[in-house]
Length: 174
Image (tube, rainbow, N blue to C red):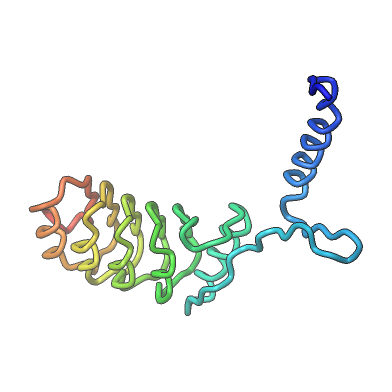
């Protein structure tokens, strides 16, 4: 039997319909006769952070972006959230942009393991030291303004070897 386009048309239509169905039902499990035929990936939950407000921000970001693994979270914005500590944020090692402006942070030591970080905004906190930025070699932009208790020595050291654009507190002359 000779195959022609008209003979394959029903098969092609079936494949297209199934593909559309699976894409449309991306967040649902599909069963046929109580047998699982498609299992949707669930949102990422395998992490722990100590600060409840940071947890809330991460949870909402994961939900909004449909994140199914820690490596998928590249941008996190948790400004004005009342966050006081960052313990556990290292789980998200692929973060490239992090906005923690206007929180209650006194330390950013936990950020030292985020080697993919390119943009860091920690302005308007209560930071006392910023030595973690010395290990973040991919940083391109850092905003540390309005941290009146911040010691400037790490910033001066960072500026000496980095080409990153840094916005320092007023009391730090770089």
